[in-house]
Length: 309
Picture (cartoon, rainbow, N blue to C red):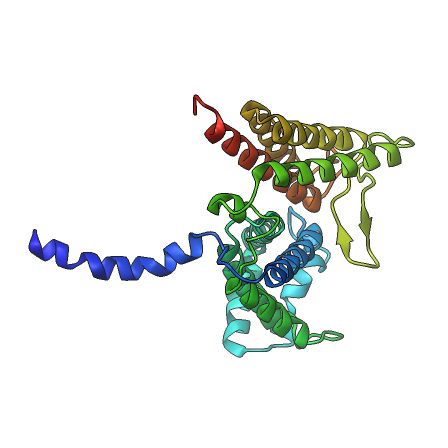
């Protein structure tokens, strides 16, 4: 027994970095610092949200030499780091389908976690790793600016060691310094607005393969595209989150989470394979997952607040 106890401090010290990563990024700082870090976090989330759209199954651009396959292949044709180029040539490109799904899931997770402010430090570490991987692939490619990728790495490092989860974030709710009610009302209203816009804009072609949405290619910003059906689904999810936040009825939050996740899964199952029922993209799926996560957080907070909880 004494021997096993002697290992406890060592075990705890090894787990300390993991506990720190998983803990809410809500250390107390000046208000303007918290808001600036939160703004940078959301900005990075929007960057990843926009960019998941071109990670497109089933072959991720291999047949047409475009998309993810095309840009990843620059690691071989215009190498930045020869050992990395060797890995890409012999392991990544021959297995681009599996690799593509991993990239899609990682970048979706980055968009969702950074936009919602959930497990911000984990997202920041993922962001550093993914930014390095992208930079090592394309930094020396034609018409690229290597500093783009240095700045991406640096921005995620800033998030990692900041209180970027202290405002407008799930981390703030987790640590008790933020309100699930306020977060749910903002996200619910945003989803309703995006969905309603898509419904109105899709009236001429209700079942379009690629619907309308609040998006701008010029600005590289998008909250997803949805046809009339997709817009209605988004309005329903947003309304459930909004009402759940205002009424503190947990079941409505869980319903929003379930519908949002189901809608996102349907898009992942159809984009690139058939015309999506919701007329959306991978960006649409990531946005739906973000709203669904907020629905789950609102439901959890309502359950804890309930006298029977």
